[in-house]
Length: 316
Image 1: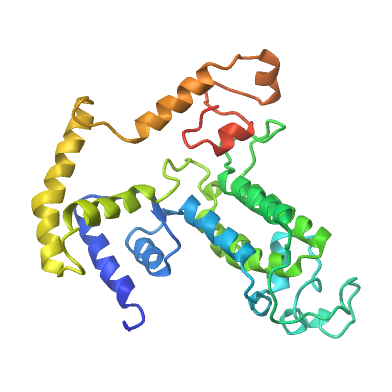
Image 2 (image 1 turned 60 degrees about the horizontal axis):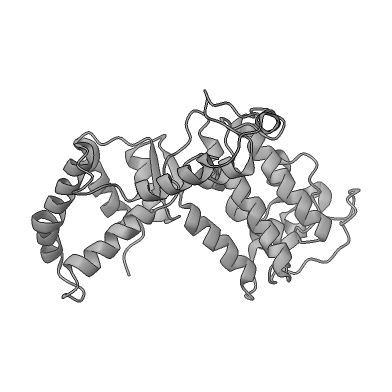
């Protein structure tokens, strides 16, 4: 087992070399690995860390479908959550020891002050409909951004979006008595420290073009199956030799073909999906009343419809 911080140190050394050669990204896609996040933020302070949409969605879905008990209530501090949601009820779903002193001994006016809360227990949603609804709300919150208007045509700030998203999820959970679900979602996703890692809305100036880490996952798959398929757990020096002598020359050849427009040699793989969606949308009839209803602006390239919000290429 590695020493605490050893992985972060190694990754940080590698990233510092990239920075030395002039690589300064504005956004970095990560799959919520704490060591990677710590290394990235240490090398590039202020960079936008964007958790992978696929990994985030899978993590929430896995937890919703899990039958294992969760200990999230022990990490839920309602007074901190109330700073984000002013209408939040302190005593609902929180352990007495985690409440402020004025709410610990029944002296408050909270309707839930007398309810018994068990530390351990599984998340409440038992029906597929409820689980799908939670996932749908969560995915919509992931895609919201200050540069994309809402259904009323209003452009909201990052802070406003955070408050409204957290309040919407809290209200939905409270209406159904899902206090464990709310505690899990707040502690792991909606508290300020976690929200800034996965929500696109945290960067008000730009919408990240990267949404998943699938490009990296595809690179590792290609490396393993096309270049290292004959080796099981190869030595580091062999991997470095394969990277420098075979992988990088092939990558440079492909990038040269893309940048010079030689699409018969090689073309970006996203182009096919983009053209397919573009042709599909181009065949649809355009109604002026729909353009007004969804506040479509071709100059700013924004639309408040659901298709645009969830689109990989921001088209509808």
